[in-house]
Length: 138
Image 1: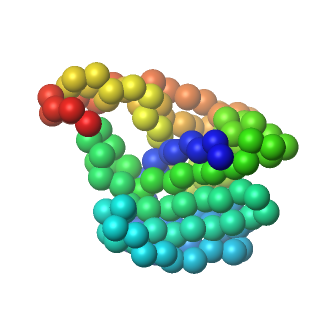
Image 2 (image 1 turned 135 degrees about the vertical axis):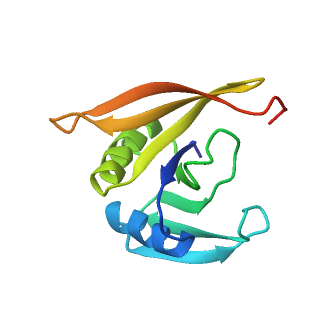
């Protein structure tokens, strides 16, 4: 199942942020789940048809200012390609007031990321950023 991730900024805690994310994406069917694979030991999983969206805390180098991760999973038979789907979801997240970014590349000491915004016509705009990070393997 193809998966893509984006990071978001929110001043709310994880449960409140997940609630806002699912509302922004019009996902009514969601729940809290326990997992040792996530920083807080929990994550939130929502479904809409064949689409699955997960919201969790995120603590990666170069993303300290984007403390939440959204994973989008869609079957390869989904009507839209995963990248088109992510673009549509990012637009909805931006309209809901979230700041959104994604990891592009990591090289020793440097995280390359892409920040998203909307122009005056609500078209998606991507801005490349480089963030210095401690020189260690991720």
